[in-house]
Structures are given as structure tokens and as C-alpha cells.
Length: 75
Image (cartoon, rainbow, N blue to C red; front, side, top):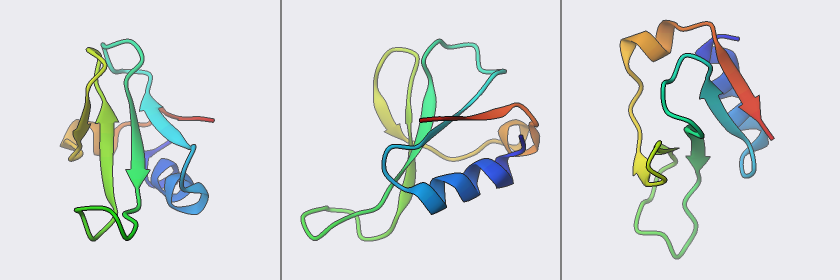
């Protein structure tokens, strides 16, 4: 699927849903949506990624990822 559909799934389902690309080289990488609560330092929703080395980092989409058609939803 394309990124637009994957993003809509993230926004609709919220917690527990993750998306990933088949074309990513790293094993186990995914992107999720974080919606801040009253205890968060962030005040607006944002996307974050689990990297191949098991780190969680803020994520900004690249042009390649934005145009890819190999996005999947992980439950």
C-alpha cells in the first residue's frame, strides 16, 4: 500500500498499530504514531521509528518512503 493509506491507518487506530516498508534494509524497523498525554513533554502528535539497532527515534519521512508502494500495517 502507499504511505497515505498507511498513515490513515495510524491515525485511525492510534496505539498498537505500526507501519513498515518491505524495502527497508534493517530487520524489525517500524514507524508508529505517538499522541502526547498530560505527562508528555511533547504537545502535538508525532511519528517515531524503531531502528534496526532497537532504538526509538523521532522520524521524518524521506521522498523515497513517501512515494513507495510497499508499506504494510503491523498489528
